[in-house]
Image (tube, rainbow, N blue to C red; front, top):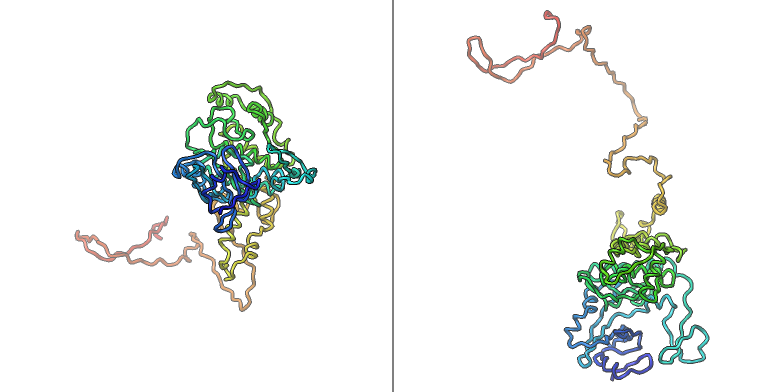
Amino acid sequence: MHHFYSFNGYLTDVRRRRLKEMHRYKVIKKIGEGAFSEVVKTQSLKDGKFYACKTMKQTIKSLEQANKLQEVQAMKRLSPHANIIQLHELIFDKVTGTVSLVCELMEMNIYEFLQSKSALLEIKHVSMIGFMGIKKNANGRFLLFPAERKKPLPDHMVKNYMYQLCKSLQHMHSCGIFHRDVKPENILIKQNDLKLADFGSCRSVYSKPPHTEYISTRWYRAPECLLTDGYYNLKMDIWSAGCVFFEIMSLKPLFPGANELDQVAKIHNVLGTPDQSLLQKFKQTRAMPFNFPPMKGTGISRLIPNCPAPALSLLYQMLAYDPDERISAETALRHTYFREIRMTEKKSETSHFLFGTLDAAGNRLTQQSLEKIWRPSSFGKQLKGRHMRQTPLTTHNMKHKTDPLIRHNTPHYLPPLSKMKKVVSGPQRSFRVSPPPAFTSDNREVLPPILAKKCLPHLVKHPNGSQQSGPKTCLPPLNSKNKDT
């Protein structure tokens, strides 16, 4: 006997038929529903673990066709990755022709996290009305929304989430896929972990344009998606991630346009109108002409005045109007905004590699000893402050500022050794040193005697004309002015 539970306590016959093949799972409750699928929380009857089951509303004919779905192919290609939702199992119902994707279960998405600390709650008793914001859905049920978050998130939390989002985009783009629907609802979190989900709209980076025009949610749609007839590429994901970046910091959407024209107007109000050359490039791929009056935007810094300078720099690069000038996910990971996270990752990798090994003294390395190794010195802290301020180093504990050993692209020479002034104990002896003789004409009598040198035997010519081998006396030539001497 199968047990099924839903939001209302029961399941319709259609939903029962869809979940007929899910005999290995018990449905707990409904999590969400979209235009193309619905998601329920399930529990495995084998190991007791909880999973999220996404059931497609479209029907297909065979399991082979189910494996060829772009979402299934993308999840198989991208897994495993720490920031990509993992596919656990694919279930195909032959009777109904529906496909269900059993994935890992996360706590909530970014949108729910920004709205409140807990998910949407259902009011079962009218006496609870009055505590928080109350809304009524289409079925007549009262829904309780916890109070919206008013205090901004700490910078380290924003930095952690954005770093993981950029890592997911970098991995996805390097695998030849771009998402096309990056938004807070498709970014799932669980404590401090973030994972990108919902790859139903993804495409290959090698597919030729024009692509589908009405793609991505309007508020997170890039300008090239709004102003061209489907001529865009993977840089549209970076624009969407930049909009999510702003929303995480400010707790409100950056460009909440009511329609496409209003969406473009809101972008121009903040960033200003681009150059005419860029607009002309967009016009070449647009059947309908458009003209925008020159406008200077207010800027993003006025919308988030307390935003750190590195975060604002990265945000402007992610929201570059021209997709060719927009930063890539790989370059964004090397931005100065994520420097501390990169250092922490490097420290963790080194600690994992060195943990348990022996040092030079033969002692086994522990976490405490590794902390001492990674602890920066006073000079290292001063260098860190120099790079953060971008100012020259004024004082440090080195003796010579122009030491040739610390200059780059120059040969390294050892410095000259200083003379040692040390008195050696013991008997001291004096040695007489005679001056060298002076080679002058007045002191010829002191010149040492010149001795003849025996050379190797060679042919000597005799007066009778014969030649024979014999010794020859070789004397060095003497340059003398007087021949009698």
